[in-house]
Amino acid sequence: MDMKTTRKSLIGFVLTVGLLVLTAFPVIGAYKAHNNDEDTTYFLQAYPAAVGTKLDNCYLCHTGGNVGKKAYDSCDYCHNVYGFRPPFGDITKTLNPFGQAYMQAGRNLAAFAAIAAGDADGDGYSNEAEIQAGRLPGDPDDDPAVTEAPAKTYTRVQLRQLPKTTQFMVMDTAKAGDAYCTYGGVDVWALLQDAGIRDDAANITVFAADGYSKSFAVEDLKKDYAQGLFYTKFPWLRYPLGTAYRHGDQLPGNLRYLLAYEENGYPLQESKIDATVNKIIGEGPYRFVTPLAQPVAPDRSAWSIDRDDPPYPYNHDRPVIRNGDYCIKAVVAIRVDTAENRSYQYDWNGRAWEMVQNGELAVYGAINP
Image 1 (cartoon, one colour):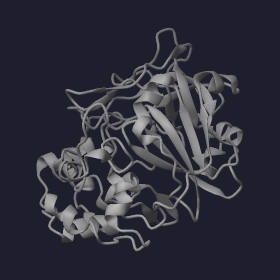
Image 2 (cartoon, helix red, strand yellow):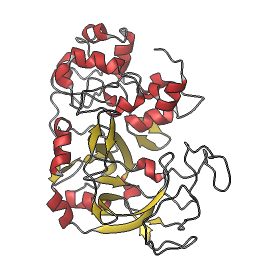
Image 3 (cartoon, helix red, strand yellow):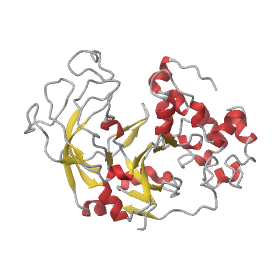
Image 4 (cartoon, one colour):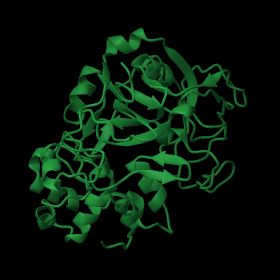
């Protein structure tokens, strides 16, 4: 594996998912934004039936893991191990057994045939048998004998029958610019309780229609988060016309994690893929909205030409993660994990964009629906 980094790889974060990247429109893997399609092209040539399934994703070859006491899915684990800027970590440490076998076999189209009869994850099933069954050949907890987890699928009507939470909040981003807006939707913890979340649940993993995912600790979903101040005197900040708050006002109330279906009183625009840039356009019908862990002053965009100018320049070393970068568009599924089991199976992947169109949301895993 060539570990040399170019400017393109720094911007696009190529090596984070150096083994997987491209799918066919309208299904697009979460790895597409990382600018490397060679390995996935090979995989889908070898297994064309895998297009749009859960195998058509980063976690075919990359694993999640723990950093300190916190468990991360494959996306965030790569971000932590490899990093966003130099000095980069060792990307090979994020490979699961199947990814390692593929790399050792030559990392080309022939490699998949060469490792087909092997059992990379040691679960008693060959790599070929697992792939044909739609199971992950690098995950020992996922094999053809595993049954689907309990699941509850919500419709638009059912979600709107749950108590509605509305909150005016800041969307603090690294690049897109900061904005204040009002999101309306369902408190995520209340949603999970309605779905029958079990007492031993430890984390949830939230999936977008394009396969992108992030994990969140259940304990964090139960908390209230303090509001910060309202700022208007910086040109990169946006806020709705007619906002009653003035610069420096303390925003009232506390914030929660939301599954939002409204922004500023209007339904979220239905998400779709812009094939020209391979990015999601729109937020909805559902967006997972994350509050700031603690109030901080907004800063400039990382893309701003004057990002180092006072006041509030772009801050590389902020103590709080920018919540806007953890708000997930086009959410179609939430997997509930326990500390022992992060491999619950429920086959929603092949119909993800149909779920977007129908306004469906699947909650599955460690639940008693």
